[in-house]
Length: 347
Image (tube, rainbow, N blue to C red; front, side, top):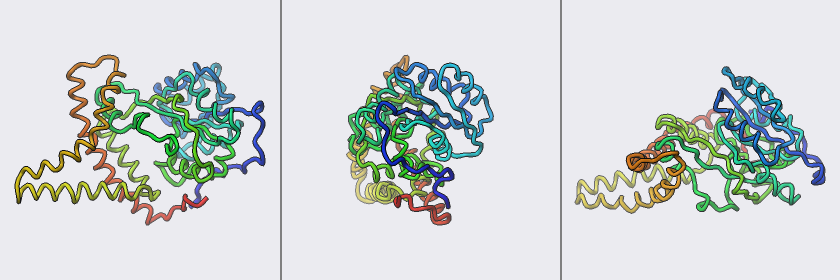
């Protein structure tokens, strides 16, 4: 099985001087429709424009490509249509076609702060030893459910350690040479591709620079069913890539051993033993509840009912995400056993 259909070009023998460095932004799209305008408008208003913007469309059946062409007189656009490609193949094709020595990537469906390009590329332009820059991302909710989801599933800036943070490809920049050295994005996997790419970059580049001001705002899933599907696919990707064994094991032990044991002890000995779950639940839910107020304030209007509703949703979202992961992970492991994908840990 090939790790990349688009073979990255060999890295140049030396980096160009800062005056000649160009910046390319690469993004993949598929059936984004009118939602794409938010990203495009935010690119129009960047304080620093990239030298080119490469969009790779995976074969949209709606007006996505037409909307991209509407912005050709406002942005330095290059649109590539690659029907049937997955996200990794699209990114690799776009990066391979890009002329810039510095590559920034983002996703459709986000809105970038006006300084995003400037901030995500500054460490690379200022220091030739920097090879990867991790940007930041925040929820842009429209409903109380989306606010609860953002608070429950996304970290706060104060919770992350910059030296170990692995960025989403909705907000990251790197030298094209290091992309080539890492073998590009892994095209054999449908989800978690940016995480595997990050880990491969870590092997090559070591610690990433961190640009917390390079913020990409994105809208969380709008329903519990959509969230379940998202986390099922994430966990299936973990299984396919053989990632986070201990995390998944702890989840299985907690739900399938610890909680049932406490439940039956309460039945057999005394119901007060059920209170043993309280400390664990408090720890488990403390972080989302601490963030919930701040995320709710991003809504245009919040009522008391909205606040209560969002608070009730937090444990529901937590449990739903855990169930999705516990079902998706073994599905991914079974796929891995059948397909024998490449060992991405070996460069």
